Image 1 (spheres, helix red, strand yellow):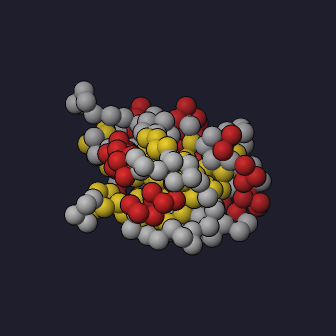
Image 2: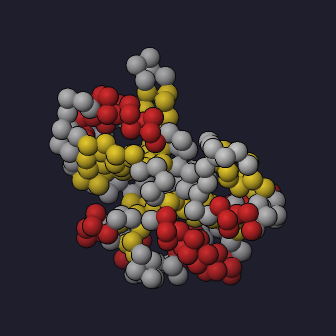
Image 3: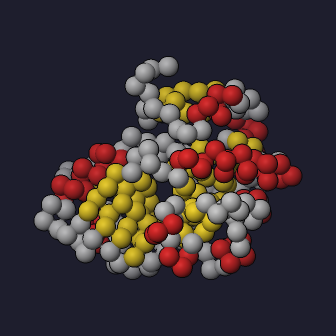
Length: 242
């Protein structure tokens, strides 16, 4: 493996599971497992599957100028975006070319988070800092400091209900492209979402498969425990790592 290639905190698990590995955005990532692509696809389509998406990067944008900066740089008008909601769009350069697509999360009127693709954290953070030089805003690239797991498919909520605390309260009033909690307990406020072992997570009702599902943001030190717990809880539903 290329020495410059990065890995996620679940890399050893993938290797031990005999995943077919390849470079993806500078990371050594699983393309499929021994069950094969067809079985993984059908699991998500008919029941539930789990994905390691920790190669993706998070950027925080904080300060009185955060909204102004993002509304200038992002392709979606964030004026109507409510706290606890997120929206899909793209960041463009001066020529109007796409730098990267992303989901922007509104934590408060002055605090936002953007989830971008593999290897794009530093580039997008630099882009935002350049446009926010005259604004009261702090942009931080959290590449490698946040892990992420996606659980997708019609039974994803049933599996998650066995993994998180107070699932009924968490799933209430959680429409598509909304989120609750935070991976930093100091930032979760009244919408704190925790695993059964009290680990805080940011839980987003979103995903890239087109099926019902969730994205879970968590401290990297806790992601392997989350991964294996979901795998165990999902066995009755035929959950597959994808």
